[in-house]
Image 1 (cartoon, one colour):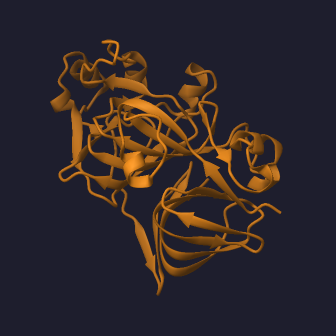
Image 2 (image 1 turned 120 degrees about the horizontal axis):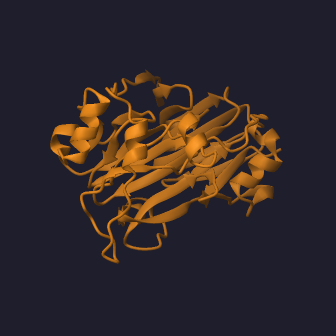
Length: 315
């Protein structure tokens, strides 16, 4: 019986990345421009590795393909979700993602990308780009090609603890001074709309994807900030951020002990603060800030012990 899988992340260097993944989470990052921690991933562009138990050293994609019993025989040709932590030292490009239908046709069978963000840390007065003001597709095209970015893009103020649901087709961008946990479909397809005319270390501008971006952008958009539901008891506060087609996402604030009866086939868990442990019938796993683990279908009940904040998701 395998109940808990601790996972080793994969790190990605980005033009907009920094050192917050090292400074806040003590990760061993590859450079001073590390933008992404692919924490729980079975995507071929960044595959998490199991760190404990009989499958230590195996990649998550291998487990999905060869041990479906660990995932409640969920089926499907790929692991469905991807958990990241993003360090936006500088502004990310303004971008949009396709839905499943468009990505399957135009991106070699890739999934679409609906995602969501939990703001872990951000500077005072931080903001993000979340949606646009175009009323028609024609107006969207005109504003993009004429560079009317301030008129087009909707900017919103953010603070630690905020949560944003970003469906495919939503124009968006994290802005500088933001550290975010992202839960998304397992996809690496991004269409850049605008990149502030930045150049890379070779003096080259990054590619834009205007035709595809315009094709997939929802017009008019209908983005709204999520209103979470909170349940509290003596030692635990459970915040339900969203329960929708691709994923459900929660925050567990645990002080002392929380007993959870698992209903979903498997859970993706990320410790964003504190320390403690998680115990199942057969296993105990010590936890600290920056740990990521998967709770398998073998687990019926688990006890989280300590003072911890976790972001938990499932399909």
